[in-house]
Amino acid sequence: MKFFKPFYIQPRFFYAGIGIVVLFALSYFIPILFNVAQLSILVLILLFILDFLIVFLGKNKIEAKRILPDKFSNGDKNQINLEINNNYPYSIYLEIIDEIPEQFQVRDFKIKETILSRKTKTIQYDLKPTERGEYYFGNLNVYASSVLNIVAKRFTFENGAMVPTYPSFKQLKKFELLNINKNSLEYGLKKVRRLGHSMEFEQIKDYVLGDDLRTINWKATAKKNQLMVNQFQDEKSQPVYSIIDKGRIMKMPFNGLSLLDYAINASLVISNVVLKKHDKAGMLSFSKRINNIVVAQRRSSQMQLILEALYNVKTDFFESDFSRLYASIKRHITQRSLILMYTNFETLDGLERQLPYLKAISKSHMLVVIFFKNTELNSLINNKAETIEQVYNKVIAEKFAFEKRLIVNELKKYGIHSILTTPEHLTIDTINKYLEIKARGLL
Image (tube, rainbow, N blue to C red; front, side):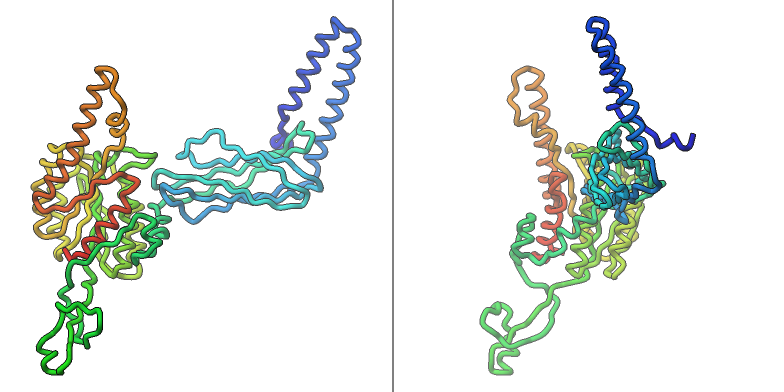
């Protein structure tokens, strides 16, 4: 029984059998076809035996292995490599079925390849996960058949493997160089004009052409009888916290990812940017409770701590408790910090319920509330309404879109910065806001 386990009869054998049955049926009307049908049976049996010997003689004729990355990047394409070695003395036709993780819900994954005699071939395919967690691979099944393609032999490799899916670390490479240059401008990052000086004094130096005349130190100039200017340095090591709302309002999906995962991916990138700018990066998440707290620091292991904390963000999408968040911020974040809060408000009423806590946070910290445009409403707004129902839906959609803009104005009225963005532009808009605050010296 173990011998027959990897033995498979290919569809071509059954198609040939159906053809022979048709010949026998037609031989009732055309007697000469009866002999042709009998000869066809003999030929099919001989070819079956020959193909069986070609495919099954010998051991370890096919060798294969799956090459997996250490971890997947959530929301990005991740490359999987299959290395197949053909030890047959002739070309072989392969049908590869890789048992990919159940999260992808792919039931018809299949790759067909031909490998020449004594050759090795690397086959690549991509997987795009849309949720964090552990992804378990099953077996790698390779069905080998000859040019006759009557029988196939199954080879089974890789008895399971697990790959964790982390927040989108691939975006870090895209935004690695954030010294505003032509390359970074192509990604949507923009230059921001510096409006003033940091108050952190560095030294007095000789005036050179191009120095700001407003920085002339007149006392030092009079003493040395030549122009001297004050030189200031940028303020550094300022705490920047990414605070992620993991309540039910962040469950809304967009292109396969939830708003929560978009916020997590953006938090990872902005934390890297903050550290590159010599500031301190930290984070926490909240819903009914405060979790995943990473105190803002600037150390070599900080990015790894933040990455692990973001990977471990778990939620049941409960109602978010902003009062508990305010109490936790007041207790744990004692130094004035820049707080990037990822949340979502669909209506003005929803904002007004949480506004007292946002105002209280903004008194001690620079608060930036980041929330999302409902891109699904754009199709309703832009389409021409032809029926009463379509007119009603369009009016409701325009009302919700207008309320988003009212929320921005309401936050601005109380001195709270905000970003209203689409999920795909979240990372870029957040980086631009951080760079703007740094350039204007608002923190």
